[in-house]
Image (cartoon, rainbow, N blue to C red; front, side):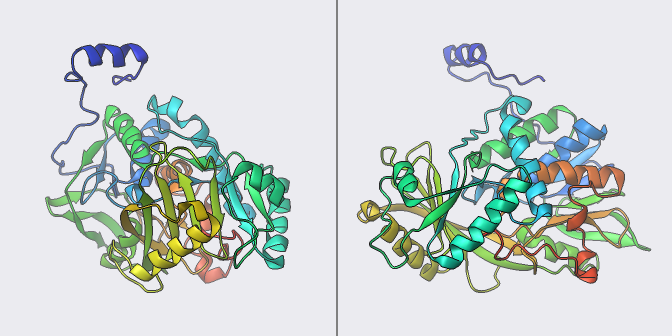
Length: 416
């Protein structure tokens, strides 16, 4: 690897006023043809290119991004990572990703700031308790580190939480110690840097207008920089995937909705884990800069906006202040939204389709960031071999015909 990060490199560049760092990746003009084109320069797309080059020996690859790297959902999420899903198929996929997360900084020689501070899902009623205990049992049968904690242990982990005097008293929680958060930009940058070193062309500010097909085969993509030929195209465009699929005559079972988040002014450390609540539908963690990172559910309508409605912000802040009265006088610094694409069963699509050479990685809803490296790894296998990896076989498009859905709408407590 050319671009090494070490204490000696940091000291050397500090003495030279940080003016001699190499560029992390090139910005080439697109070639006329590639062996594989990946549409979408977020974590999933860049990771797919990285694993195609590293594990499958395919080097003539282009990652095409209409904006800048990570400008879509990769840079617009709340960075939560966990694998404690109910169904076997989901648990295997997300834990495959979590295992990669645990060594990703070393693998990329780039600090993705993965912090295993634990993820806590609060129970507020009898139904929550039964559902979470069921999920914990399923998790443990699959070898996942999920356990039940009572209110006493919750108060030890999060002393500032109001557990009694609120609409929905806290009765306990499901807790996964291996869960946590990572730095979303760093994930995209790390994958981009290492993919670039292996010859992958990363083309920014280049919008894919149409996927061109002929006689049931993909020919390439029409872009704002002209037509680019390829016999294999992988689409990882989050909320806009269904729009691109339609240009190839493929109708995907997706709905796109805004998902909002906001951050507070920075404060001293007060919460050292991730806390999620389905009853009040709000979740919070604290960043390394001290900001409270706060998120909610999706807006109640289909849209391609990256803004969202103020009613969601209001409800989310109300819930956060109820759970943590200490936050009542804090100021919010900024708010943003991402566009999430949601499948009928709240599980993703990682699959080939009826058009030969065309592949889709989409439908992650609000759970895409946590799956980034695992999703990229199995999607690269699917593209390289034209057949699914055993981990993503259950997430093929044909499940919507056969009825073998992986229904995670309620099974995961919240989908984030």
